[in-house]
Image 1 (spheres, one colour):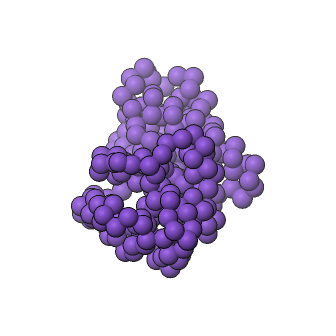
Image 2 (image 1 turned 45 degrees about the vertical axis):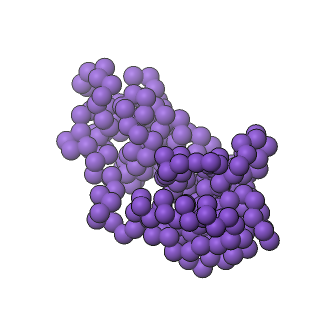
Image 3 (image 1 turned 45 degrees about the horizontal axis):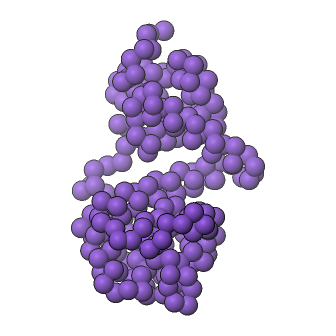
Length: 232
């Protein structure tokens, strides 16, 4: 077994799983699993819901400049839910306080339908509101006033987390088992990020790809990472 002291080495899906996955890739499994450049993939689709027209225009412009296709706009929560269910976008960006149906209740309905991740916009950052948003299934929230550098990372995090949760849910049916699997995968991602210098999405993609390549569950791969990388 090679020296595993090099923290810059990256996991290699071609290496046996019973070895610490710190061997220099040839090429990197992360590179193989990485998404195509933004110019080569279809624009991701977004729905924006905000009752203040100027703020809604600002959000729409920010997303379009970042390469998103804004396929729907709404000024109230009921319309936001309807558009999300009809259009099935990649992300919904929605204000918390809106007429007819508030953003948190709308996020809960969208979440239960397993349609898309929701990013909530709010003028407040109280702990109670954050907890309500989390319990409703919101993947991220942004406090007003915000800039593109605040909004866009939150959108990317929401899309990434939603994709990961969806992948885990499709693998594990039992709710308790799903929760435990998420905990272990999160711990494994943290180890890969710390030891290997990978980003959070790269860490998950490597776990997911290794799971498919080895015909193992993601929990089994995560357990191997925890045992081998954690003890390296």
